[in-house]
Length: 413
Image 1 (cartoon, rainbow, N blue to C red):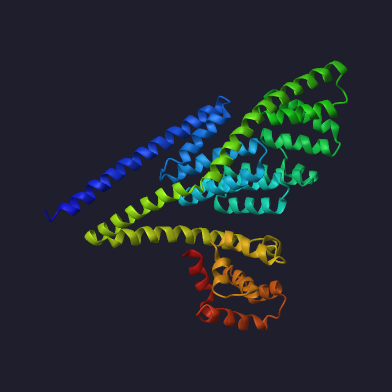
Image 2: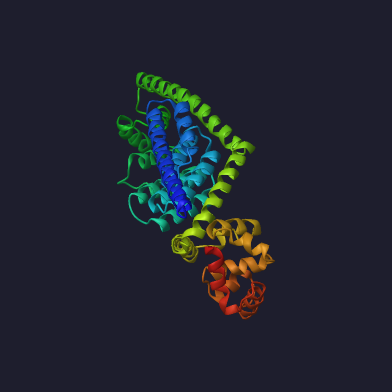
């Protein structure tokens, strides 16, 4: 009977493992079903499958990242770009937890595209550079090229679009090139690419753009040809409207789900489950004293955070214009971007009593900037930087020479 507690723990853990495996299987089946329904044009049913997969309780972070990414794609197609950006951000968090570097880089690039559509060019390009720093290889680089070109197009920098879409390029880049020529009133070039792309393009939105270019820019087309093009464009627009109506319903379903996630009953069950797991976890820990596993897991987690920290530091150090990257004139924006790059660092420093100048200094010290560079950013003399570092370090309980190590540890923990 002395071994009864151990036997109970083993049985319970086996049951939990079987349950988690079943949840993962159910989530994957729902995800695959959602993709099939999307392909069939059943947008609302597909969204419900993705929502159910997100609620399944699976611990597979990579799968959850793909689920949220599909929902974000549907928000994008419904032209709800603010919501698409937020949902892509959720998917990026799951990909980071899964240590899936390529998927995380794609999520960053998708976030950049949404920022580009919302005419936030600087934010879009910053996200693009971060994606490249995470995964600086193909197939991501072609997608990055698309985001850069789109950012310039929506910012009405049409000459820059032509620079980013120089052939050889894929069909999407050539479509952007045709649009840029149209906006620049270079009709012959615009219609050349539109005629080239029309037979091999299946995307409804791209077809609509190409038909628009041909009906408005092709001066060589006869009246009959223009009537045919206008009729075909009208058919495309009807298809877009029908699809858009379903997508709007699907996105509304997602919006309602996100709002109802704050349901108190869900929290009650979650807290109860957490309490049961915590009690059993403490019991198992007291029986087995298996601290090495916990230490290993924490070490792996910190290693991942350290890698992301190093990438973000490198991103700041290689930035062509650090003042622009951090919007240095706006303290709130500096704190927001610092929190995003360094895991809530600015919020942590504020909680420890650091003021605006201290936090600006800490960001530059963490990025490894020289005293001269720091002085230029803070508009003060180089000689005063050492004293400022000592004062800030004293507030954090370390010496000036230990300030950078202290900041790195704070950002990793």
